[in-house]
Length: 266
Image (cartoon, rainbow, N blue to C red; front, side):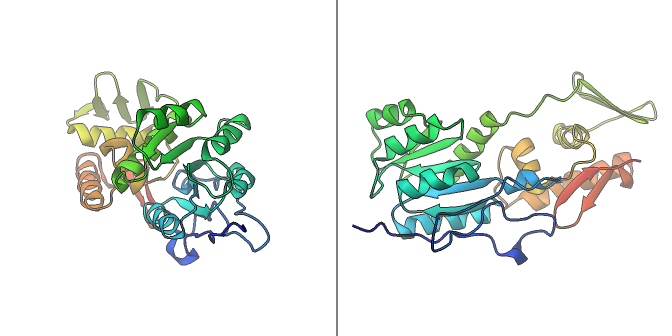
């Protein structure tokens, strides 16, 4: 039986900021999805690529669309053979275990044997045995096919955090005349203490820990509020940025239109 082919889906070029290039290219008629490494630059964190391995076209399309909506680059393949050819170009593999050509557990083992690529397996049955077998095959996490979108996205974020931990920021960040002490959570500007709320401090410290880098709203929401859901992100971030500018001065928080924010120099 000839395996069905699910066309890869990518974010349209007009939907992405100019600084971001698609991390996963569409599949061609002669081979599986091809991709390059995540785009270098301040917005690269937002170009995490996810390969969806799913034999059902409707399910694959729904997962890819939601990943694209949340800012990931995503593509889909329908078979284990295609997954084994394409997984090296993705940052994370979302692997359904029920595939038409190769047992999903064997696909997971082969991906794991080739490196430390993060893999989240999706099982049609919610049993302890299925989860144990998936984890023993090398999956970093295992979810049931009926799990909600929010849970699946949260698990993707958690696996990526474990796979790519950030280096800890220094306890004190000195950006004369701005001093930020992570231990005491105190901020001083020109020697004078500036009173900040907990979230205002977290936002300032997150930007100051990566001076020069632009952090997107999605990344800031993930790090500070623990979510990438966009419903309240604009209001929350705008409010806290406005408060920081009122307390520190307009030039300390720079807006990079279409991308996010970076630390400036007062």
